[in-house]
Image 1: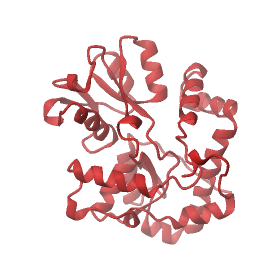
Image 2: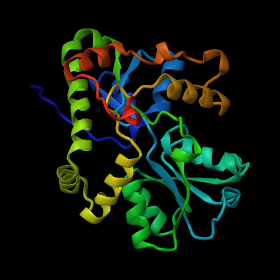
Image 3: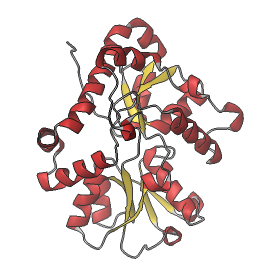
Image 4: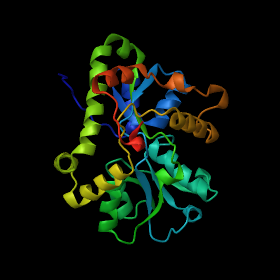
Length: 281
């Protein structure tokens, strides 16, 4: 068995920093900071993703009808280059806008919904369950864009490891990835129990998590294999180059970002999921 300690951080970028500093054995972050860190020579590799596809929307104040209406608005972010800022920028681009056309306002991950409800910000990149809660509490809010439709091939998230940690403790890391694969398969096969667990530990009600489960499983959000499709990661790398987050001459390759050997080893134990081509990633 595995003896695991789970630690929460204020966003994936901070978790990534903990992994780079070797304060964490494994760190889960949004995909773009992992790629950017590799482009800068960080000694890390992505091993797995439990959710390769994006599962967030931009929820906005009611007067914002189109992306171009974001001009001059207060855009809630964690920090420049982190997940929320990157995808706020992707929505702004639909309206021909750049960060120079808006006001960035720093909000915490935990305070993202509340900041939108009280009008401290005009936008929020929210997970499905957060969006359901926000619209229920403030019906004047609206979904401006589903990010999985704006950038359908964007690689959402990854589990990363420091290369030295992987070399020193590979067996335990393979076991951890194997357990994550089994957990995702459990999600698809056990709706009621999954909803119960999330309600117990996530601070949401059944009428918020039930619809969230249905939306995410219908969309095939949860990976059942390694969650690192080459197409998605290479697309995300190119977008980060286009957005100026990575210099073109520092563009990393798929092989430089990913170590697929750990997931392959884990899959030898759990086997491949069959019968649902939409989940073959």
